[in-house]
Amino acid sequence: MKNNLSIRMKMNASLVPDGARVADIGCDHGYVAIWLAKEKGCPLVIATDVKEGPLRRAEKNIRLANLEDTIETRLGDGLSVLEPREVDTVLVAGMGGMTICEMLSGEPGVLSNIGTLILQPQSDVEEVRRHLHKLGYFIDKESICMEDGKYYFAIRACQGEEEIPYTDTEYRFSRLLAEEGGSVYRSFMRQMTDKLSSLLDTLELPGLELGEQAKERKKTLQTELQELRKQF
Image 1: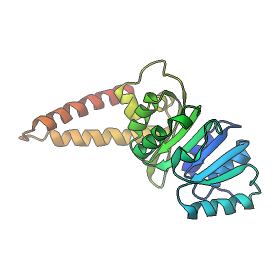
Image 2 (image 1 turned 180 degrees about the vertical axis):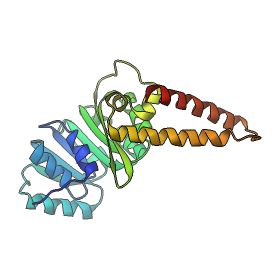
Image 3 (image 1 turned 135 degrees about the vertical axis):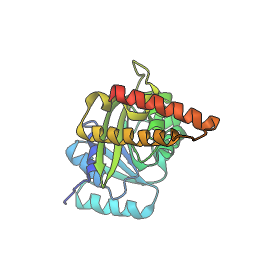
Image 4 (image 1 turned 90 degrees about the vertical axis):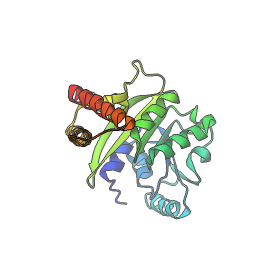
């Protein structure tokens, strides 16, 4: 069976450790689960989805790939379909960042036995980074890609604490990607710098009277731009 992952899906799947026992939460058509079994040597993949239609499609693709003995499908929401200790890694992709945070906090008994999380939020990436630290995970690796004109971040986190606390700038724009560089990340940062500069220009128009909230926003933008230009 031909199994071509999109750029974003391949980025997410590549962060899964080789040989992991993994749950793919929100598996959709099952292509990532199949790739993990074939390319990452995962002996157990639990592919879950909250909707029956996508799960049935995944089951069909899993049968075509002859991987019924390796990939198990489950209908249900988030981590609630998992039992403690049956997987060591969880992949959650394509959901809003706040939804992911709520999902991780909703099943503490399951989460406490998950050593590795791979998360690809569609929004609120900063809040996901902060929430991971609150949950007792450190950020081990990050990746970024562009697909269909949009930037996507993927985060791999492992149980443990950061040796050095994150700054607000690092929470917002990533510590690890800033250190590693890369053309896609540099393009993203140029876009963010231009966006912040444009917002600041609007607040600095001659004759514009700012309220207290706008003044605080202006200070925040000035600080962020200084940090960006210094670090990136």
